[in-house]
Structure formats: C-alpha cells, structure tokens
Length: 394
Image 1 (cartoon, rainbow, N blue to C red):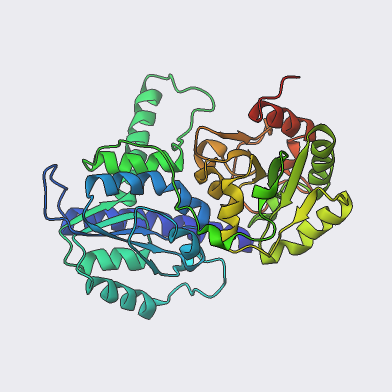
Image 2: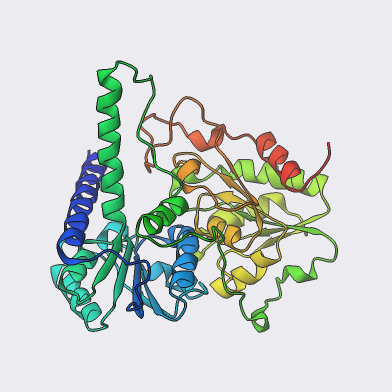
C-alpha cells in the first residue's frame, strides 16, 4: 500500500510541476529571439541521476553551439556532480538535492527553507537564460524570482504533448478508429531534450554525446591499455533497482561463455555498495582473466577504463550511459524500464528487452509475485548480441 501511495504522490508532484512550470514561463519569461545577443550567462537545471545527465549531453552541445561565448552553469543532483564535471560544454557545476530525485534519504518532502535559499542564491548569479530540463519546485520558484529574461523548460513541452495527445484521442474516438493498444508514448529522453531546444528556436546540429577525456596520469594498475591483444569487456551487474538487475547466475554463465569463446579480459565494475554482488560473481567464475574493480574506481578511473574498452555489458544504470558517451560499444539489458525512452543513446549501442507480454512499467516492485521481466533475456540472447556487436561471423 505504501508503494502505491508513493507512486500516487510522485504522479501528483509531476503534474503540478508541469502546470506550474508552464504558468511561470507564460507569466515571467520571453521567447528567445533567433538573433538575440543579450544572453551571456546561462544556467541549465537537470536534477536527475547520472544516466539522465549523460542523456542531456547532446542538448548541452547544441546550447554551447548556439551561445559559444556564454558562461554555462549546470545545476545537478549531488550524486551526479562527479560526472557533470566531465561534460565539455559547461563551465561550472552547482548541486541541489531535490526530494523528488533523492536516493540518499536526506531530502525532506517539505524542505521549504532549503528551496527558498536555493532560489535566492541562484537569483544573485544574474542568469540571462534558464534552461530547466528537469527541475523541482525550488527551481520553479527560482524562475519566478529571478531577473532572467528568457527561460526554456521541459514542463511546458510535456504539457503541450499531453494536451495534443488528448486531442488526438478525442478525434480518434469520434471516428471510432482508435486502435487497440494505442497509447501515449514519449520519445527517447535525449530526443525530448533536443525537441525542447528546437521548439525554442535553437538549431540542432548534433546528436553526439561527449565527455572530457580524463587525465591519463591517473591510470590505475587495472588499466586495460595493458590488454596485450585481448578483447576487453566491461560488465556491470549492479544497478539502483533490484528489478533492473539481470540475475547473478546469468552473469556467471555469460562470463564463462565469453572466456571460452573469446580471447578476452573481463572487467567487473560496480560501486562501493555493489562489492558483495560483484565479488560473488568474481568468486564463482574464478578465472585469472577476470578482474574485480568494484568499489575501486573513481569516476576518472572508470572513464579511463571505459574509453579503451571494446564492449560494455550491463543493466540500465549510470555506468552503462557513461560507456555510451565514451563511444564504447554497449549492450544494455532492460526489464521494467523502457529502452525506447531510456536506452543507451548512440550508434554503437544496443538495448535488449525480451519481455513480450508485459509493457515497461518503470516500477521497482513487480505486481506479479516472484516474477522478473529482465530475466526473460537469456544468456544466448546476450551472446548473440555480443557476436553482432563485435562483428563475429558464426
């Protein structure tokens, strides 16, 4: 019951945020003029998690292209600060921990004082343009009190889409032509951010994601540059939600098959809270060609490794999206989340979701007892994807 209540509260918060954000834009801000030259100081607000930050990079690249001489500041969730600092299109990073996106448990639902302080601290920075790609009530309040002339926001874009969808439903119903299964769907998150800019008059010239290359003086003893002719495959078996994790038993079987079929080195990666999971897989495989890096890599060191890795395999998570931004080939494994919207973004990426009966719900708890849609992906499915990605002829 508590889970359903939390989902309901989040849904209410989402819709109220959309309405408020759109109303603030209408009341307080102007549209960007195509030849405006008065935008020198820009703030981009993206309070989601690491994967969402990565998916916003193409939008950031186009903002930088449109305003090459502006100072660009990005406001992110504290957990995303370490990766935001490697985005080449921004000059400064500010943190704000909004309750809606918090995973630490430290953000309170009605932390009004913190939100007001954030808004007025931001006002002092005299931004000319606010780009709210996904903010909170605090960022909307900031938009109200700021001196900024211009604002681009996700809320207005999504609200327009929802209204257009409702109109289309009415038209289809009136002609009795609505198809079974017809539903309101969103584009990929990276494309949504690009659409938001395009509708605001900013030309889209690239859909590429890039991260700054880390200082190679920080290379660790696990450096895959020492691979000596072997294929280096990074595997991340963890993730923020248990329902998103392909089973450890599947990963163990997969790694054994990879080692049997390929002259390869396997890098097992994960955060400090995933060391037990990764350690259990490492022990079960028990092979010198497998290296356990869980809990041992900083973001710089992770980037070092992923930039020279031949293939990344893992669940829907931050490291998977980081790998795609490093131009590494990626196989993402998907269960409750929708790969059409949240899949790895790039030419070298593939998302596997084999569940046919149950559509993606994005819920952390399945309504069916003892069922895991992600485990509908078989080990053979992943091996076939590896052969495709590495151009292996069978």
